[in-house]
Image (cartoon, rainbow over all chains, first blue to last red; front, side):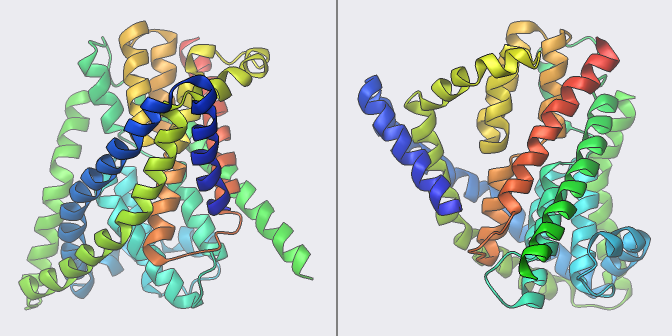
Length: 195
Length: 177
């Protein structure tokens, strides 16, 4: 799936540019966007090192376990495949909490760790049911504090920069619930096909 | 409200660092060794991430800079107009799942043009806040662990985005309409 999307994005773009006369822009984009990706990864590297370092300490200090206990009933129900004592649940919980407080930078390394733990349980290069569910939770981005948006609104002189916080939270709640339902429907569809 | 949010978002990370290090020290753990050990893992993770991200970035920016993205958007124009989705918001709806930086650029452009307190401004803010860059998340999370077959992940993720966008329109109309 990703191969097809990746190749067609590039191919359609290049063919379109040939007819549209934007080939110089495309030429430039190939090099500048590569550079952009490197910049992002460099920015991400420092955050990854710091958070994974700190999370290692947190793990040994059993801080994750305490957080885990709080949210376990919710997440064991959402991730029935994972053993409820497993570390993956701990990382999923921490990722969720980081997102909830608008700490996207902290959430990413935790999410990657959660994925790694889930993969260790499955031993393959195929996305498991838990991975898909986890991804869906992340893409709907449930948050109390949409920091970037608030910053942007302040920058453009909004009279009430935080007025969108509550609507954003409601919208996220509705979309996360419907996304989880869709996720379940697809799962049952897959199961049916297997039989 | 703003002051409260500011305090929470300011204090959250340092407080977490403090709690972790205090508990670690109290339990007599070799905190710095553990930190370095975990940090090394972060370094190799970032290195393995780069090719995935770079490949995706280049393809997306070819698509965008050629004008094909704009052409696709105008193709969907009648349908969205029929669904009463304001056309000013369409570029954001398309950019949001594909590219975080592009979406942020579009949002900031909309806020500048229409004002943050206009209907479009509020809608753009809510959409930006309540959805995420599905492609980026899939690339990073699946790339980091080397998942080749992603099953229904992309389909479900994009459907979730669609729902998020529609929900944002309904919710904003309800609150501010």
